[in-house]
Length: 171
Image (tube, rainbow, N blue to C red):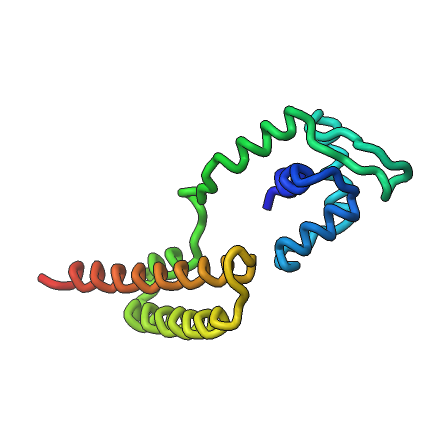
């Protein structure tokens, strides 16, 4: 998670101190991604060094408030207008297991069934949990919705692998 852009986005609301940024970040993300005081201090130091933020008053380390510079606002605008793209060369343990299953004479169908069963169980659990979550734009709601769609995609992938495996074995 890019701490730099998270802090810049929060500073776009209003000038804030390191402690205030930490509190606001925790509030908005429901504590899902905790940031330590050290992470924030390092990030603020780099942002100031790079000319993306400037002091906006206060004295003493904790009371110093920051605000974005024009360059900081432009950088934040770029971040929000740029898509988050997963790397195509990301290593995937499930793909690795499926690929290696035939090399060792392992039962691919059993592997797919076990994975499908686990994915369905997680899908049921997340769906059940999501019924008690707050409405959009709560982070817990967004995380839950994302996880549901990821699990549904995993199940579709397993079905596709099984179909490819059947095609390969048929004359």
